[in-house]
Image 1 (cartoon, one colour):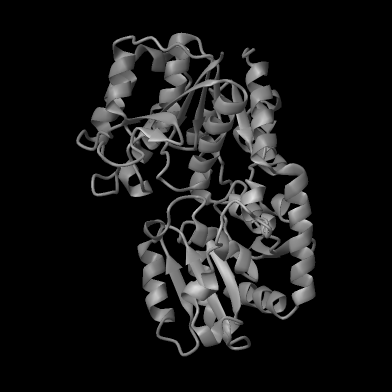
Image 2: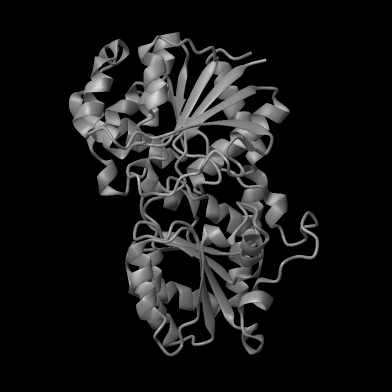
Length: 431
């Protein structure tokens, strides 16, 4: 039996694609390939808690603190009290860090992102031994990556990182911060576009990088799903009875500028100029920028916005969320901060067309005019134009959705992704 340590930034009930990816790998590899999986992570629930004490954390007495789907979770508290200079000094005092090629600038910027896990730093200071065959961490550019590297170096354990590198986002492009990825034995990129960027921009050797995409639990989203009895009727619950035949546009993700949620809100009045009978559904963690823009939109005559947060849901397979994917007319997430975008796969598994931004890795994920459409990032006019076009062409929506569903069925199941990951671990010495 192989022992594997997963060291993600956060873990469920924290919600994001990176966390879900690690969760599904841990669950499938432990059940199907007999790995002994340990999970070390922070107690942060939202991104703010990675750095600031007023963010949302999970307490030790709460459900899911220790166990998620039968897997034991080791959550460590975050040090918010020490200054950045004190944290940098602590890390630089570790003998192991001197064996890396990481500059003070790199360390400082990654430490700033958090989460600074004091207990794991102390274990490294005390030469605590870790007995694992593989250490796998995600995502860039957070401090848990440094913890993973140091544990690996201290115990001669191969290290793997799935960075979910958002190379279309300017704040990820600092070459000094990117040098941390060169320290890992293997990098998993989600697309060939991401791989080429890591090679050309960060000078990571090609032989270190493996392309393994994201996945989806297809059977949970397909229209003849029998796993969830008494299927939740999303429109029945949230639409007015007289408006249940209205069109529906769905967004599911972090509601910020990077994901395109704010741009969608700004495009709604343009869409309503031509299509007044439409609902816009947003599912995901809120942000101040989104809430401010939403308050403006809600005052408009034809605005119909349904806004759900993780507090309204029970998890990744929440029946309301799944019903929303099945009942929507199209899925819209014009993001520049996705290395892949699991939500596109969920929409395709539901047989729905998607609209994404023509930036970063997304053009490799979405085949323009085959299983969806591409728009310019943060271009409200382009977003509105493409949404209106698809809402007016039912046959086209059906064709794009069907093409996407076929693609997902062939290539993007979590089982296939887990097998590729297992093969990579074998390459690094697992039996």
